[in-house]
Image 1 (cartoon, rainbow, N blue to C red):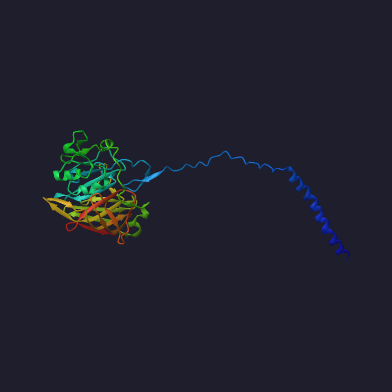
Image 2: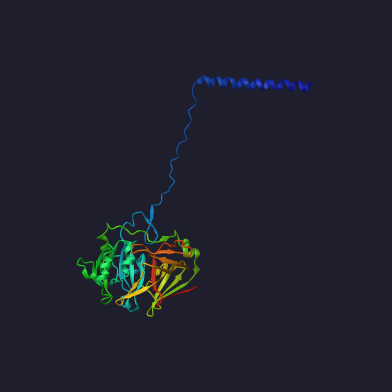
Length: 350
C-alpha cells in the first residue's frame, strides 16, 4: 500500500516542475516582440574549376562536331583528274566527299568536295562532264574545272554555282605543276578562290549522320564485310579494305594502293556504292542521277544493302534501308562510287 501511494504523489510533482520552467519562457518570448536574427553561413572562398565546353555544330558534309561558326563558309567542288598520269592528286586526301564517275575510254574522274578545310591548292583540275551539275548543284557553293563542251559549261553555269574555269580565267587562280605533264597538271589556288567568295553561304547538310561510328546504320544493321571491290569498266577496278586500326577503309586502284604524294594510302570513313545507269551522248558517258537504284553502304567493317534516290538536280542523294528508314553515316569523310549497271560490278568479301 505504501509503494502505490508514493507513485501517485510523484506524477503531479513532475508536471508542476515542467510548468514552472515552460511558462516563464513563454512569457519572455511573448514580451520580446521579435525573433532572433539567423546567423549567415560564410560562403567558402573556392572555385570548382569547371569550364563549360565550347559550343559545337555539325559540319554539313562530314557530320563531325566542330566549333560554332567554323563551318560558315562555302564548299568547293572541283573536277579532278584520275588518269594514271595525274596521280598522285593534290589534296584529294583532305576532301569531305568524293564522287567517282565513269568518263570516256573506261577511265574515271572525280568530283571532289572540300568544305571542312579548304586546302591551299587542289588538282589536277580537268574538264566538266554532263552529270557534274547534278552532283554539284545541291552544295550551292564554288566549283572549278578546266573547261569542257559548251553545253556542259552552260549547264553548270545554270546551277548558280560560282565558277573558276581554267580556260577562261584571267585572275591568276590557276597554275601548271611541274610534277606532272600537261594536260594533267592544272592546279587551282583553292584557298584563294574561297577567300574571294567568303560571303557565299555554306552548304546544307546533305546526309544523316550518327553521333559515333558505332551508331552508324551499317555498323548497327549491316553484315561484316572486309573488302569492297568495284569495277567501272574492264580497265578501271577499285578496292576498299577495312582497317580496324585506322577505323577506315583503305583504297586501291587497279591492284595497287592509292597513295598521296607523301606515300599515305587514301582512306574513307564511309564507302557508298551506287548502281547507276549510264547513257552515252556524242560519245560522252553520262551517269543518270535524277533517278534511283540499288546501293551498298559500308562503315566500320560492315555493309548494309540500301536504295538511293535523287528527286531533282538540287536535291541531295537520299539513302534508305530496306524498311525505308534514312541511313545514318558515321562522322567523317565519304567516297561515292557511281558504278555503272551492266558494264560495272561490285563484289563484297567478308
